[in-house]
Length: 243
Image 1 (cartoon, one colour):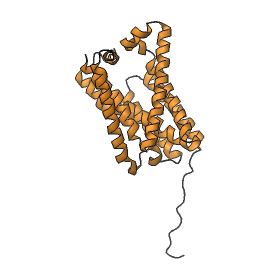
Image 2 (cartoon, rainbow, N blue to C red; image 1 turned 45 degrees about the vertical axis):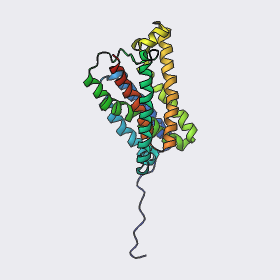
Image 3 (cartoon, one colour; image 1 turned 60 degrees about the horizontal axis):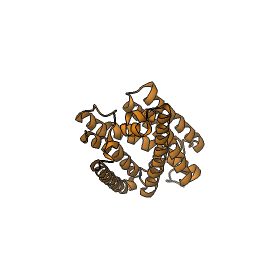
Image 4 (cartoon, rainbow, N blue to C red; image 1 turned 180 degrees about the vertical axis):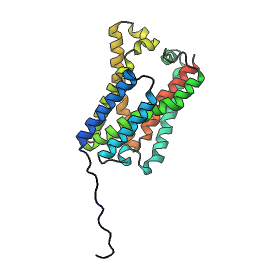
């Protein structure tokens, strides 16, 4: 009919979900090795490059902002969930800091020499960009979204959370020596170091389930990001104030 517009031509064919999942997993393995083995100290540029690659994989697979939990209609609700999570973590940390039995849990030799400026940089830059944004986009965004297309919510949660636990193997290798409370509890043997690392992997896998559930219930990536930021950043602040 005269005056009608031609149908829009689809110019790209989405990649198979299984292929996109495989590419994402390989990418994350390379990022993990880069940060913890090949180029330590380059966390921020590595995180930014990785996030660009993750967004490219999501687009390549035919997904978009809604699948990542970043749809325009979800931002307000996600922000409210995130603020609530920050408040809960702050209350728990305050109680733990006031109790003599739990106060030593905030001691960490990795942070003992940090200045106030160093803490501010970690809280405002390193944690939100190098840790939270990267990990939430990867595990509760791309992997969870692709996994839900493939297996549904439960399968996506299990897959994403398992990989989130494995993601923490390298950074947890010396945890028993870096956390005096753990060192006192487990001792200084190789077996205790292995046990501490295994415990960290298990703990973060379980935390991954909680973060995925926050993502599902809120419909927004901001909710797990808020909880993740609060746990990491407020831990730095509390440990600094308790010196």
